Structures are given as C-alpha cells and as structure tokens.
Length: 225
Image (cartoon, rainbow, N blue to C red; front, side, top):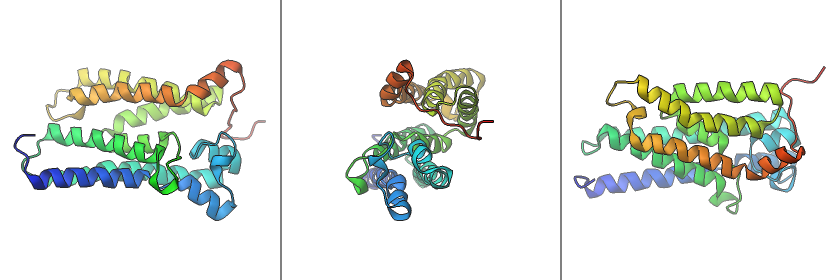
C-alpha cells in the first residue's frame, strides 16, 4: 500500500462507498410497499429478504427480490475490476479490495441507509458478491444448499450448512490450484471464508433456536402431494 498515490486511495474508498450504497437498496422493503402495500419487516420473520418474501407474499414477490439482492452484490464486487487500470494495484490487492467490497455491500444490505438501517441477513447479496470473486465455489455451495432444502425444507438450515461448507471448499480448492494469481491462494480470502461461515451462523442464531425447538417454518419449492 505504500506505493499507492492519493488517486488510488480515493478510487478505492469511492468504490467501497458505492458498494455500501448498492447494498442499501432495500428491494424487499420497496417491492413490498409498492406492489403489496405492506412493510415486509412487520410480517413473518420480520426479515427484509427473499425467504420472508416467499413465506409472506409468495414466489412472484420473492424472485425479483432475490434477483436484485444477488446482482447488487455481484455488481459491487465486479466494479472493483476498475482498479485493474491502476498500475499500483497488483492481483493480490485486487482480491483484497474485492473482499472488502463484499463486506461493504453486505453491510449495506443488513444496515441499509435507504430503509432506516433495518435490512435483511444478506445471504442473497453475499452469494452474488462471492460469485464476483470465484464462481465455482458458489455453484458448489448452491448445490449443497438446494440439496439440504429439498431434503429438510428449511431455508435457514440450508443456508447455514452451505455457509459452513464454504470455507471447507475453499481449503480443498486451494490445495488443487497452482496459479499464483488465483484468489483461493490468497490468505485473506481463506480467512474471509471462515469469517463468512461464522457470520452466517451468528445471523441465523434465532433460526437455530427455532430449529432446535421444532418451530421453524418449512418452505416447499414444489407443492406437497
């Protein structure tokens, strides 16, 4: 970082602010109010996210929320690629900046400036953001998430298990990759994957309590026979 000039710092900070503002787009809140006349944060689990939209308002409301939340995470991280044009930024620092952008956009989703700092858990946004760093890991985690959901029908359980598999998959892939520029060889990325897993468990602590008590709501992608 010592070789960075003032313009590099300015650009990096600006991109992090943009990431936070993108994360702050409260799709569930705005769609709920605009098209259904309700504040989703006052219904169901009171979470402004895809799962609660699905539970309270159905697939038609949940799908656009997921799409918006996913792409705002993806765009926030991909914008960091602009820093490729800065000669003072190497590949290692580019990955580090993308990791910081992930935290910024998810922070914006959880504490959105456009919705009184009361947002969702940021799972869809996190998925989109990580896709911008290393898509194969996201596809594998999604496969795990979908399998768990199909077997037990708990979105929260699927998210927790997939999130906990994330750092394990990162460690496995890191031993299989020999490209020095690969993000999985970045120590910050490995640490980041474990932080993500811990944060996912922490943000789902109430769901864990309901799962243990047997009161967590099930969601069926297809109608039961």
